[in-house]
Image (cartoon, rainbow, N blue to C red; front, top):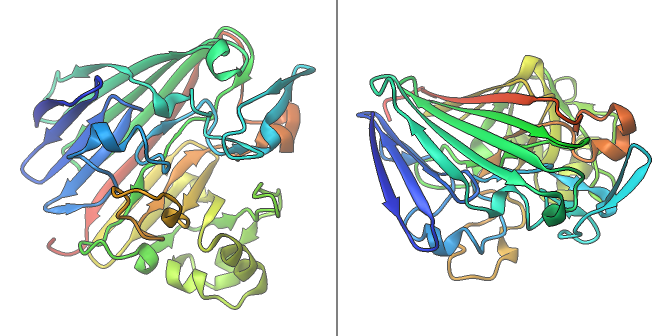
Length: 340
């Protein structure tokens, strides 16, 4: 494994790791993944060349570590221990992805651990979120460890501890596209023995009665195009409203695969849900750097149910007690199906 650091402007640094089969690029701004090349095929969306110009301004959270809380909190408010907290409504009227002072919009400190370069490289990102910045209760120390190894597996480990009861529901907002020609991801197949999709209400918030896609579609392997074009009323209503997927899923034992004819992405997580989003609104960003069309990629956001604090109250998975360590782990592994 070889490592190279590229310094760009405004303190942004790219951490480039490669071997003879693949290359992956991380960044200290937002503890991001920028690029992942399997051979000559870049399977994630991003902008490596103009990273210092692109990432502080684009609205899609490409490859970013997101938090304190991934997803939306309805109307930018929540109650915890009898007190109501008001957050930034950066997706009016809702709060989205921790707001503008969250994890995705900051320079992390980082350390590269290369004790066994023949097998793996670890990049440990650290930062602190303060109550006066993001208006969540408590100050929270956050550590995010990216590991890349010779099995072409990218592993993310989240660790955190707060000095007060708070919410913490981190995830990574990477967009995958396994197609060599950068065509839309509608040809990708999602597969798991359980594919339970949580419907969204008219405000975009998840509801608590999921649709069993395996039962409704008659298979545990579903091509996205098939899902988008289904005539099943409950599913059609959901995908038409969002022009694709923007939905939480429960998958079997935290295992999900996404594939095309050449590659399979195997996801393993201890998070209770996974949000799949197919970049449905890419044309809303008016910029010369926006080369992305709708369905250019699909996210695999491993987290707990968005807005669970309002849906589940004191039983919400996202509640983190004071001085209690948080830990979560997700791994993305590439399998080559054909000689690519």
